[in-house]
Length: 89
Image (cartoon, rainbow, N blue to C red; front, side, top):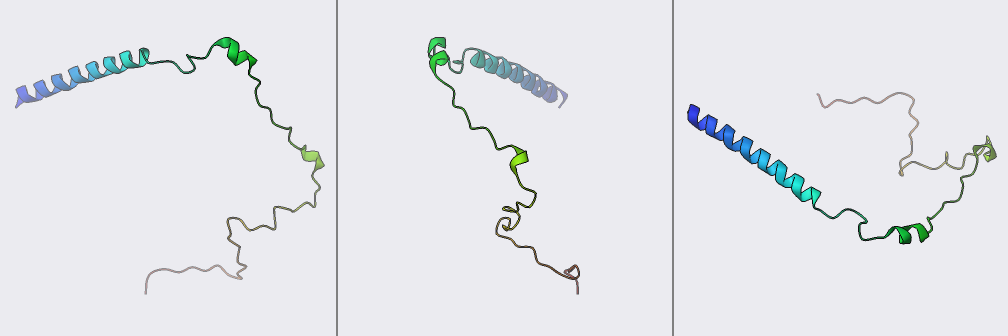
């Protein structure tokens, strides 16, 4: 039994090391991202830009355009007391 455990540990160790080295070699030789593009074509392409956001100072204190809309279709119920139920008898 002791020889079997020793052989199994040796087998797991050797296969782990070989798998790690094989993965490392495959990743090292894999094509890199954007390797086919040249630097000249990247520099000539303009980057998209976004419009600037509206400053917070332009909002009015009474502006409740988003407060009156229900969130995800659920509306809050006004209850005078909290409701608590159990599955017991």
